[in-house]
Image 1 (cartoon, helix red, strand yellow):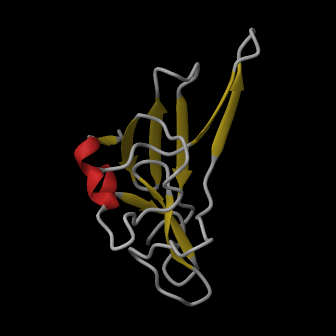
Image 2 (cartoon, one colour):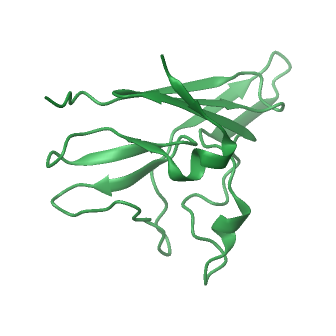
Length: 135
């Protein structure tokens, strides 16, 4: 049974997708890849935002029968507080079109991000899995 988290918790929740000491990245509550801890460098809460450096992300492209196409990053909405940085932003990929709604459900070792938007003809489900079972 997956435990669901509402929009108030999406900014601070993530599922690690690797083991301790094995190199890991986390699937955030809005579909973002974060907490990069690779090459023996700890990175919980680390943001890769620097000039000219945006973080990896998944995207979707759709086109309907009339030829109208839409592309969005598979990321949920931003919080107003994320723009309160000395440079006016503190998030990766801040200028990309995103989904307006997101939900996160999890039970270790699985995490599920649901994304939907009235503009998009599809609903998206991102499933993360951590292959490391503690024991």
